[in-house]
Amino acid sequence: MTDKAVDGIFGFGQGKLSVISQLSTHGLTPRVFSHCLKGEGTGGGILVLGEILEPGMVYSPLVPSQPHYNLNLQSIAVNGKLLPIDPSVFATSNSQGTIVDSGTTLAYLVAEAYDPFVSAVNVIVSPSVTPIISERNQCYLVSTSVSQMFPLASFNFAGGASMVLKPEDYIIPFGPRGGSAMWCIGFQKVQGVTILGDLILKDKIFVYDLVRQRIGWANYDCKFKKL
Image 1 (spheres, rainbow, N blue to C red):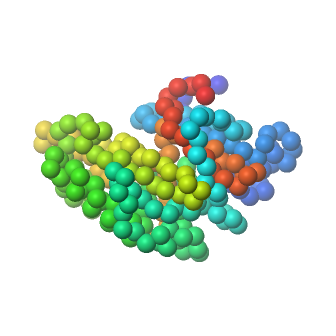
Image 2: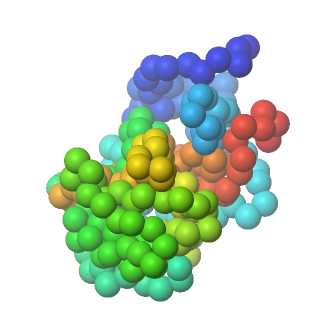
């Protein structure tokens, strides 16, 4: 056991050769695993071979017959207001879909969703912060707490499961600039595939239930070692 973060690739895909599938085949663990990634800058977290039972857990079904952990993202809301996004941009096909991937550091949002998302955030924060573009990223000069100035965002999935993002879940700090702190949208604007990486997954319990073909999550302060 160690308190130090471990870096590397650990095969926990859905295929027969993945670690979790082989352990399950030998009767050593159920075909379920969970993680809780720390939100602090030091990295690390908790990996559980099995299911973490946490009050408030919500579940969304996996898209069948996919090599990745694809979910059906249906809509996005900012401060409770649904954004004008055609749900078809999230549909799973050979060239698009929505993937949960702990191996991705940031997060990627298709252009058709990124633009209305950023526009909605800008409308809410513009009276109090200064929006700027830095290296093609949407950023903000902030002189107060981001949790007070920026809105909540909800990613709504099939099965009635919503993932509520606090400001710290979708914006990242870039240090001081001109007496203010610069924060930038952590989503990268892309074509085709939306990927929810560590930026979104941190400080949440995630359960990958391959038996029931679903993913569950609940907000949790992952710096605590006991679950």
